[in-house]
Length: 605
Image 1 (cartoon, rainbow, N blue to C red):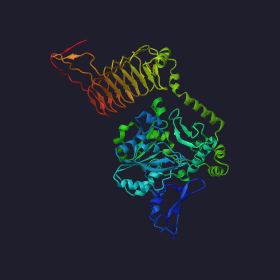
Image 2: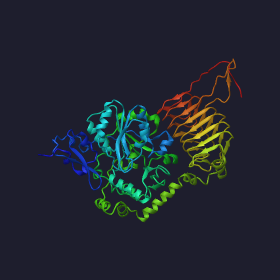
Image 3: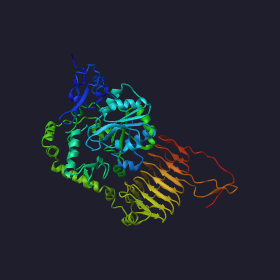
Image 4: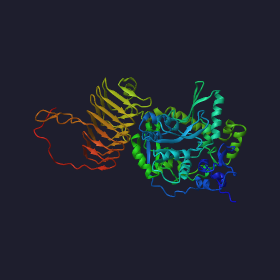
């Protein structure tokens, strides 16, 4: 009789999802690890009735999606900057998971075992369990029983967020056999899943060398910046160790050599268009047009694969900063999005060496870096340590160093992050009064214009007593500008840059989002600055706040007046006057009307 069980699936096609055991009605399938540490199904023929259900539900038999290149793509990060900094990249998972929990939903994902030697899929329904599911685990997570559990959660009618590798998500859909409106699936850009056995041996190696048990472990910790991550290890003896990605030969087995991943990963079908999740997330490597602030804190790629996925992001977007990008950018920075890893010819020899002489010896022989590579990586380590100074060093010739030192190190009103500076280029006029507050979370360049660095004009930056100015990202204020915050007023800016001769005068409150561009001769006012009274001497022109959203472009010679709210993605055409609401993702073309308002009015200087 022809074997219709999962045993008939070739080893190179088995992804280790364990869905076959979940779907087997006779519980005839168990798993056994091979010498490489990967688990494979074992069928008890005395129980199996050869029904073929396990094969029919296997991800390797799933229909391939041929075309899906019109997917919406974002550069994204968590709006909570502390969470973003603590996250693997941009903190997108934490944001969408927080939304699900706020909706009384369930989270299904991977967490470490208590000894950090393995990982397994489980579900959580409380915020207390969210942290354990966040963060990358660079080896295969055990999904035994998770598909049945997820099915049970879906039956409650509550929202369920399932996160796993692309093959694990495909396995879930195969197991369920139909769509569920309350299910959101998220996978990640996957190069391959390293061996759980090698991870266990690595943890044991660290404990053996330190002669102490590991009490905390993180596979991807951003010590210097998102792009300069490494392993963070804490031991029971109180010692702490950080292993930079540029010095980690064990990590090199995966990142550079692809030598420790599952055999099926070399033949992975979940590439290019063939993603069965609603959303795919990952590091947005190589992303352009972001600041040094963003490169430090992390940027995630967010690819929307289904309409359901977009609807979900629309509902949870108040947790996220989203900026439209192209799918091609993601592919360029993440080759693993479209291409499978190449299988090294010495892979089998590597695993034999691991099981013989041990992991440390195998890594030294098969993943050891050349002298040239070591020199390159040492330069990258040095660059990571000097990262905060690189933007300053580049502009050293145009900086007024006297003012730079004064306002960054001796001005009590300036509160700045360790890697953020008030960069006073020559020609900057500064007036920061006592009792004001200037918060710098990203580099603020004053009287700075990259295309013309030697301008003779001046820029005025003034913050009056009782006023507050906050820079949440890099800001470039060109020459000939005025940025003024009056007493008791507040101004907040994200990533923003101006053209020349722009005036931003805050008398009440102004908020600028991320990626805001102001053209030449733009004026932004939240007050008339002179009181106007009616015939009963009542003030009729109160100050009103101005709000400018993310990714807004304000054209040259435009005027933004008090009470204006410009939504995300709006473009204000040149010579426009704005007073009121401007809808997002629209081009605003001003039509001025000739009319008079009020009677018997007077104004006062």
